[in-house]
Amino acid sequence: MMVLAVTTALAGAVYLLGRVPLPPENPSAQTTMITDVKGAQLASLDSGENRVSVGLDKVPKVLVDAVLATEDKSFFEHGGVDPAGVARATWADLRGKPLQGGSTITQQYVKNAYLQNRERTAVRKLKEAALAVKVERKFSKEQILERYLNVIYFGRGAYGVQTASRAYFGKDVGQIQLREAAYLAGLIRSPEAADATRAPEAADARRAGTLAAMERAGLVTTGERAAAEAEPVKAYVGAKRQGGTTFVQGDKGTQYFVEFVRQQLLATYGPETLNEGGLRVRTTLDLETQTHAYNAVYPAMLNRPDDPAGALVAIDDNGYVKAMVGGKDWNSPQPYAKVNLAVGRDGGGTGRQPGSTFKPFVLAEAVRQGYTVQSVLPGPREVVFPKADQGRDYTVANYEDEDFGPAVNLIDATRNSVNTVYAQLIDAIGPANVANLAKSAGITEALVPNISLTLGTSEVSVLNIASAFTTFANRGQRVPPTALLEVAAADGRVLYRAPPPVRTKVLERQQADVVNFCLQQVVQRGSGTGAQFGRPFAGKTGTNQDFGDAWFVGYTPKLTAAVWMGYPEGNARKMVNVRGR
Image (cartoon, rainbow, N blue to C red; front, side, top):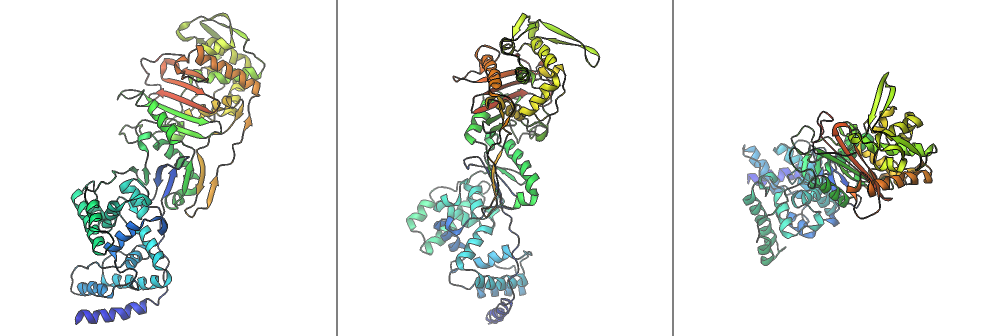
């Protein structure tokens, strides 16, 4: 009798409270998704609530059935509230007993979408019920169910069925099967206690409970239930999470590119929109190219604990960054693990001395001033420039003190990377002119306009040297590097779309062709023959003094790649077993 009385009283209270206007929904943070050029997910960004909303039409029926069977089998019949359930909870509260469950799906949605206070009290339960009645009057059952499926928490920082499917099974919600749907539905109550990676027996029990409820409701057959229970729950281990960033393709070294892009987005949209606005970001990165690039640098070349680090950037003829290898292991405890070695100061580090990879800019300026491939200069083992180093004599020597004779043309000087020829050449055409041309080609770092510039003593980033060589690949046309193709809001509105590449003439075509011809000789019969791969291309090697940095920049008309190798500590640590020009 007491429960009946409480039920009657509560029904009246709920009715009266239901006439109060529905308050605004709590702001629902949406997760930002970053993908490669083909749509493969690279990472997600959030502020603690990892959520990607989907329409009800994208949720498979098997998951809807599983949720209804476990959470609210009468969802399509009631008006938002189970009065008897509210009465039981209130009666338990009056007697000082723990509150029982029994909330409808509508009430659970209200709790997540409208109520700030999550304390389990009779007053909160009454308010929840009243708002549920109001929600039922405002929205259709399908709208309520869709909203519920996008706000409910599933553990692993995942809010909503799409993010949960990604977090536990590594795929979109539309792809999940019965056994997976039953497990997800079983996670809604106390999800952390049934995570299959930590509590496999509890995970199996949750799934079994859902399947049993579905069978009782006639939603699955006995055979379907048995087949779904045949194997233990196999949950995806999950992507690596760094604060509010979840990396999906981290084994391919994509974290450095993602962070590079994240910094650009942060500067444009601010932290709130970036982490809670549900942006859809399509980048220029090609995951297949990235995989080849990472595997070429690390497992293939630099895999021992004391090996130097490596970095690589590949840019196509439109300036699109197709691959970026910024380091070996983002999750390593090493102090430089999260420094992006490919982008210099923008990645938390410094630039590196490019060595002889800077000589093509000297060559380009010389050609621009009228020099030809047959122009000759002496190539002695060393050349002294009186008082050229702040009042002191400056000496330039060739690698291993080699003497190339009294007359070396620019083809051979480039092919053999003859320091003494190039030092005389930059002195003749003017270091400041070379610096200006290099900046026009894409080098954004400050360049010291002196004779040593020809030896690559001014630091640059791997990204910028790759971008600048793209100017040669484009026959004198400069195209700025681009990492972002499109940014869309959560509702699909396009906020940014990369404009068509803007090409700026740095060299005449014929001038660029001369540079390209000389750099083809480098890889055909000069210092870069080891880089040959069966296709025509051009390139330049480079090392700095005492081999603190080693470089190769190569290109075809469609793709340019710059590779650097060295220790993150800088020139304080030299590489052994590294030689070259």
